[in-house]
Length: 283
Ligand SMILES: [Zn+2]
Picture 1 (cartoon, protein in one colour):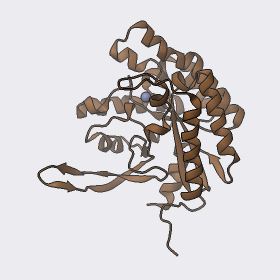
Picture 2 (picture 1 turned 90 degrees about the vertical axis):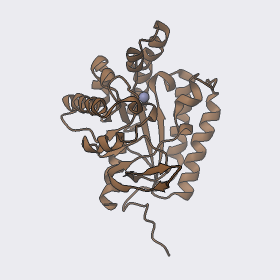
Picture 3 (picture 1 turned 60 degrees about the vertical axis):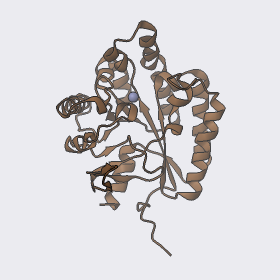
Picture 4 (picture 1 turned 90 degrees about the horizontal axis):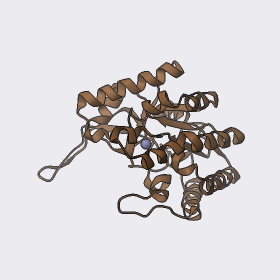
């Protein structure tokens, strides 16, 4: 019988991580968006985040909030409520920057300011980073590791299992692929189908505005598959208060939580808790 190298000692049968990107109006401020676009973002702190925090408290679910510095310092009631609820706070840029467009010094500056903003309210260095738009430059994750983060949550090379981020991969049509070496940074992988935004929000090349039952089917099938085939694994959803916070989508989210709660051995945890357990048994 083989050894399951993916499974951490004492890991639950399946962990569900609710991750919330609280972008609010940070992106609109940076782009200088018109009023309707700004108001779309404002729905997040005004309505969506309140609904989410109430639901998480009522069900006793700890979540991971990735919050841009602008949101953290502008909507301080939400910042206080996130911390009072016992949730994890991770970094998500300042004005929701696209890190693929930032030079090294700019990226270092945004990372440093974001870390300080979290430290100012929690008293501790944040463990987690998620790139806005999941967009990274070729060197961004080396800077993230150098800034002291324990984990990133922006890549897609796995689904139910954590892994170490490689640095120094080289790909070219002339020489092919040379793999780099794994660093210290742990990856908690993401995927579009498990994100509310591409399903529900209109955007270039898509209509969005999906019926919630279609998304519920995708998310619950991921749960069932991982529960059966990936013992010790992680199912993560990425949600946004300005998107999931609409009534018909909150109802869907409650059904997803119901489905997870009905499966044997499923626990809800923050990414920081999952990563901490995994890293302790995967040095
Ligand atoms: Zn975001």
